[in-house]
Amino acid sequence: MTRTVVESKTKTAVLGFDEPFCVIGERINPTGRKKLAAELEAGDFSTVEKDAVAQVLAGATVLDINAGVVYNSNPNPNETEPPLMKKIVELVQGLVDVPLCIDSSVPGALEAGLEVCEGRPLLNSVTGEEERLEQILPLVKKYNVPVVAISNDDTGISEDPDVRFAVAKKIVERAADFGIPAHDIVVDPLVMPVGAMATAGLQVFALVRRLREELGVNTTCGASNISFGLPNRHGINNAFLPMAMGAGMTSAIMNPVALPVTQKAIAEKKAAVEAAGIILPEAMDDEAFVTMFGLGSTKPRAGKEMEAIRAANFLTNNDPHGGEWIKFNKPPAAEGEEGRGRGGRAGGRRRRA
Image 1: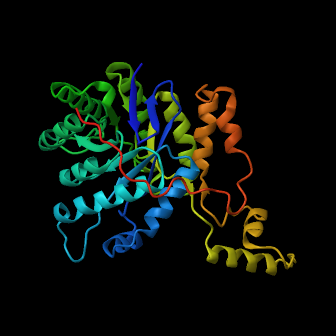
Image 2: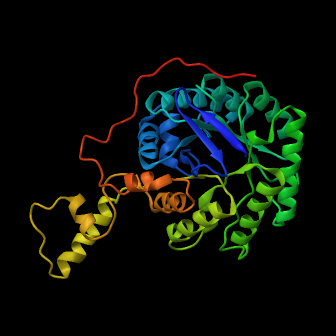
Image 3: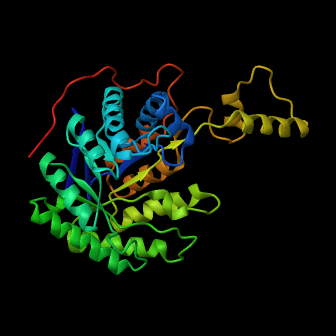
C-alpha cells in the first residue's frame, strides 16, 4: 500500500489510501493577500504566526509555506524569496510542530527552505515541463523528500483528463530515473472550476481513481478551485471533498479555518435585530450574539470543510471508533485554554539521501 511520509522534528503525517485524509493548510501564502504581502515586505510576521497556530488548531496536519511576495523595492523573486522562505520556515517550525510543505516556483527558495526545515517536508512542486523536471528532481533526490507533481507541462494545462494523466505518468517515470520512488510522488491532477466546466468534478474523480489504480500514487489538489466563481463556495467544497476522498484522493491543500465574523457583519446584524423589535440582554457579548444568530464565531475555528472531512474519515473507517469525530464535536476550549503549540524551538536535523 502506497504511503507518503512527511515529518517535522517529532511528528509524522502519512498520506495513504488507508490513512486519514491529510489536510495541508494553505493560509501562509501572500498570493492574493495584499495585507500579508505588505507585512512580509516590511518584516512583520504577526499574521504568519497567527495563521500557523490557527490552522493547526483547526486540524491541519501539514502547513504549506509560500514566500511568493513581489517586493516593491525589488521585484526579482530569485533574490527576495530564498531568504524570506528561510525566515518563515524557521519561524513556523518554532511555533507549531507539524510537518511543512515548502511551496515556491523559485528553485532557490525551495532549496533555502529545505536547508533549514527539520524532519522531512513535502516539496511543492514539480511539473512536466522539461526545465522544471531538471531543476526540481535533483533537489528531491538530494534531500530525500516527497514532492507534489502538477499535471501540466510545456503545452500548459489541458482540459483533457487523459493528457493530464499522461503528464503525471511522465513525471513518475522521470522521477524513477533519479531513483525517486512512486510513493514519494503526490500528484495534483488539477481541479478545474465546475462553474466553467460542468464535468470538472467527474473528471477529477476519474483521474484520481486512475492515478491510484494504474500509478499507485497519492494525490492532492487545491480544493477550493472546484468552487471558484460560484455562490456558497463552502457548500460545494463540502460536497466535493468527501466525494474526492471516496475516489481515492488522500490530501488537499486548503484553508481549514473558518475566519472570524467581522465587526461590520456583527453591527449590521444587530441593526437588523433591533429593527425587528428584538430586545437583547445588555450583558450579551459579541460571541454569544453571533452564536445565537448562526453567524459563526468571533474567533478562528475549524471550517465546515473540516467537518465534512472528519465525517468522511469516520465513515471510511479511517477514524476507528469515531474518536477524532467525537473530539472534533466537543465544545471549544474556554478562553486562555486553547494552547499555542510549542514555542522557541531551535535545532533539529535534516534528512538527506
